[in-house]
Amino acid sequence: MYDFACEHCQGMVRERMVAREALRHKGSFVVLEDVPIGVCEKCGARYFDASVVRRVAEIGRGTCPVEKTVEVPVVRFA
Image 1 (spheres, one colour):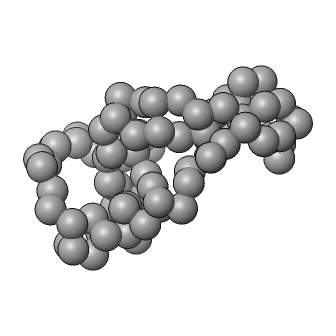
Image 2 (cartoon, rainbow, N blue to C red; image 1 turned 180 degrees about the vertical axis):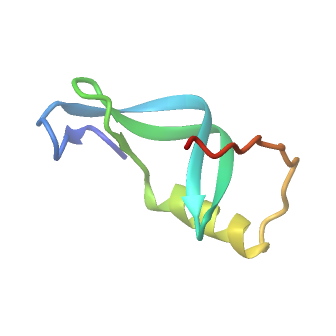
């Protein structure tokens, strides 16, 4: 699925299983657990397979069941 040159630094992008990955969807966030993503070995850029992006969209549309909801504190910096 991965194993290609990074578009930013030409390092190799390898598949890595990450415990949690937060992705934006229409002004909100979806957190996936135990998700395979591509990570550049040189610069750390992250790449997502279309199946991961589709899953995020399904969750955002409410067509995929959600296992749990996590509350996140938000504070204005200024």
